[in-house]
Each structure stands twice: as structure tokens, then as C-alpha cells.
Image (tube, rainbow, N blue to C red; front, side, top):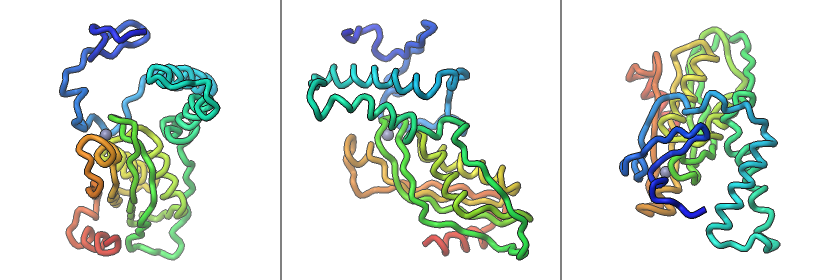
Amino acid sequence: MKPNETLLNTLLFEDDTKIALTDEEIGDDHLNTSVDTPMRADAFEMKDEEKIAQIEYYFRQIMDTLGLDLTDDSLKGTPKRVAKMYVKEIFSGLNPENKPSVTLFDNKYQYNEMLVEKDISFYSNCEHHFVPIFGKAHVAYIANGKVIGLSKLNRIVQYFAKRPQVQERLTMQIAKELQKVLGTEDVAVVMDAKHLCVASRGVQDDTSTTITSFYGGKFQQEATKAEFLKYIA
Ligand SMILES: [Zn+2]
């Protein structure tokens, strides 16, 4: 199908609703919406296997439109490979079924200082360009009677990273989830990441990184924040 001028700048939905986008909305600006990833109510009515089959079909159309020869041995498996990677790996964090289950332990040692898990590697994808965002996350909390298994901190970061994201929302989602599971406001998250939509295209700046932060509860006090920042420096 040839792109039709009336379809450009318009989002079409299966129920025939159309939403027109202004040039600013489809431009290069990284607009921030809400803390929740915008999802349709029926997002999980379709099984993973059906999603993979559909994405395979549409990705084949994209490659075909670009003029690639899909009978070529090297290319013919790509649509299926990309579809599986989207659903089972890099966007698996969209599905709440994949959220890590968290076990808390009693804080038997009465350890009541901050705990910092730093340099957690993460890979995400920019929701405006679908190219990688990757870097390090540093998280901290002050226990409120309960402590969490350390690997769960990494798993919570990975879960929210495996979505189309903007870094600001990713930071907030991790922080809010930690506050919820740990039952405390005293949570801090700092993320330092490289965005390939800035490095490999667009402005093509390969050296800049983006830092986002969240400071809840006691971390809003200057001394506590400074202690955290000293550990991750
Ligand atoms: Zn981007």
C-alpha cells in the first residue's frame, strides 16, 4: 500500500478512530506524558504467540518496503527473529506477568543505614525512535523493618527497562515500585544513560549522556542525598 497523504500525521486505530498529530508531536522532542506507560486496556488479550506472528508479518512489510530481498538466506529469518525479540526480550516488561516477584526479609541485623546498589547495567529503548537507551542505574533505600534480596533490585530495574521508554519515566517507575514493595518513601534512583537516538542519528552526539534522578523521603534531606551521591561518585 502506498502512503496516502491523508494518512500522514494521523494515527489510525482498528476501530477507525483517527488522531491527528501536529508536527511538534511527531518531531524530535522527547515529550513526557505520565508515570504509567500508556497502554490500551486490551493490551494483553492477545497471546504472545499471536503477537509474534503479527509483528513478524508487519516487520516483513517494513523490510519489503525498504526494498530488501526477503528470499536472501541472511534476511529471511529476520522478521521472525525481531518479532520474538520484541515480545519475549526487549519489550517483555510491558506485560505485568513478567514483573519480578519480590520476597522481603526481616531486617534482623537492625541495619538502619542506607543500602546502595550501584552500577546496575540496563538496556532499554527510546519510545520515540525505537533505538537503544543504555547505561547504569544506581538505587538506594533505607530499610523500614524489611529488606529485599539484592538481585531483586537489579530485576526491578531490568523489568521497567524492557519497555519502550523515556528515561524520566523509567526512573520514576523504578522508584515508585521500590517505594511500594519496600513500604518506605526513603528511596533514591539515579540513572546515567546514552541514547542512540542522540548518538547514532539526529544531532549525532556520541559523547553526551543523560542523567535523571528521583529522591524520596529522607533522600530529600541534603545530608542523606550527599551521602548517596558520594557512594555512587
Ligand atoms: Zn529518541
